[in-house]
Image 1 (spheres, rainbow, N blue to C red):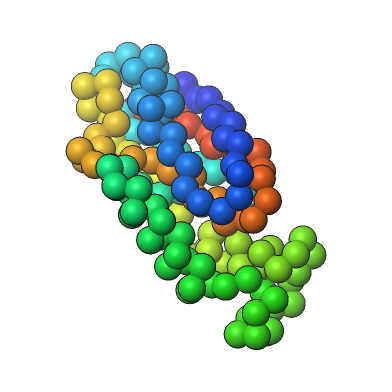
Image 2 (tube, rainbow, N blue to C red):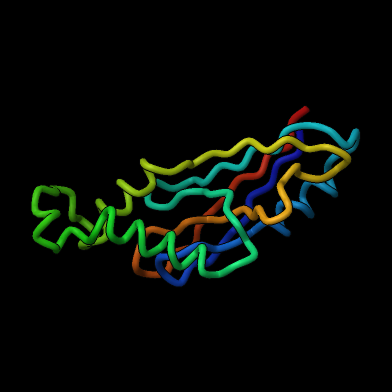
Amino acid sequence: MPQTVLSIETRGQGLYEFTEAARRFVRANSADGEGLLTVFVRHTSCSLLIQENADPDVRRDLDAFFARLVPPADQASMAWISHRDEGPDDMPAHIKAALTATSIGIPVTAGAPVLGTWQGLYLFEHRDRPHRREIVLHLGS
């Protein structure tokens, strides 16, 4: 069963689209044209999303929502947090990852992921500083 690892360099919090890389992987490895693409991120402070990829306001609004939902640990409302080993965004990043997905399954038909017209695949970085993130793509039947 074909598998590969994508490396995504982030510049801090935000959504990083990798839809085309996933499409290329499926096209190159989908012998019978049908199957299941499993997408898995190998980290605990970022996550995966299938989200609209047409209007950048969607990404900005998602960033703003999650910043309000889980603010940095140095804010008074987050004083209860103990885990701060890597700074005030450390535990909030883990919380955001726990609220979202670290693995996504996408059907494959006719040699392509079955995504809707405006759907894209995103790595959702929850840390402030840049990171190199690894996403595993696995194509099964």
